[in-house]
Length: 233
Image (cartoon, rainbow, N blue to C red; front, top):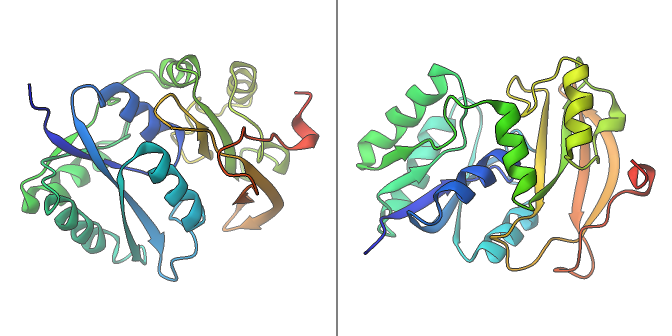
């Protein structure tokens, strides 16, 4: 049976990874779509460097399709990426959205002109169940942004574990960070050919969020090195 060709809308975080884990047997996922800021130096929302996204694509064995935009030009630029994906024979795009009717409506609206079908495998599910599924798959992720209104700077650099999720819930934070409380970077998953080794740098405040400067480690492909100040957590 020939599987439909698909692309994954890829932020680099745990939710898109969970969506990919759920769908990779039903679709031939050949590309990933990632949006960067206008200068191309950091990805939108998650603030990841281009070489991190490229390392994800290499480990997944897919083509990386990227765009650059302001928030005002996001939709138009995403349409350009979809056109490029359609040129690879992609007929479906997998999104990691979980809730928010406006998100689903946008997915459907941006895909329609390119005759591409949006797939939302996580839609409407319990965020606690989804983060447990991510952890249970053997995947790992580290928090790279934390909204200061909800979390202090100690949270950036922490690995997503069941203990961390319980702490987040005690603080009133959604388990998946669905209200923008935090964003993650996937460091390993069963779909990667090898884990990432990362160097975790300075914590800084940008746009009312604590952010973590993350770079690839020297020996790419080795195990993820947790920051020393959280190694005992």
